[in-house]
Image (cartoon, rainbow, N blue to C red; front, side, top):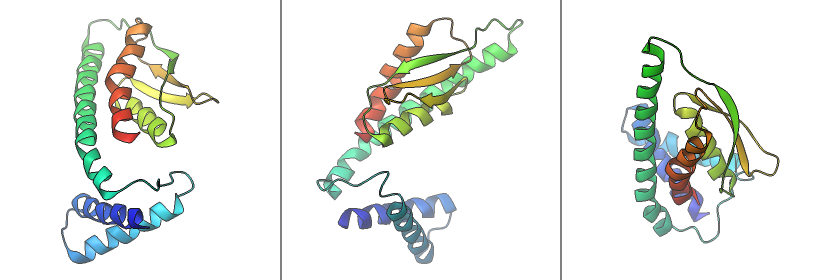
Length: 164
């Protein structure tokens, strides 16, 4: 139960920043909504017994690194998309490819899939039945091994550090 309270208080602070108003009432509403969300989704994402506030605090630098890498990847992909769109000819080879993943938790798989979909030029379509591959549509699939390595080394690595 302490984990729920710690997460709810954290989500209350996040709610204040997202809402743009730092007040006690706004914090209470955000904490209540966070607690309500966690209780309703506890079957999907159960909190471990060994999760402590210390572990949550130690995870913050890893999450910050993940967000930084994500922003850099979004910027690089945006520049690449601008080159493709503004180029004199459309020299792309779009396609769908199965990308193997190492993540084992539902939250990690969801984070990887959403991270891929956030980067321009890619969208996650499906996850395999055994949850070891993501099916991803790429705007340019001319070098499939480089794309797989990019996802594994740049995105998935940081997701695993932050969420597992």
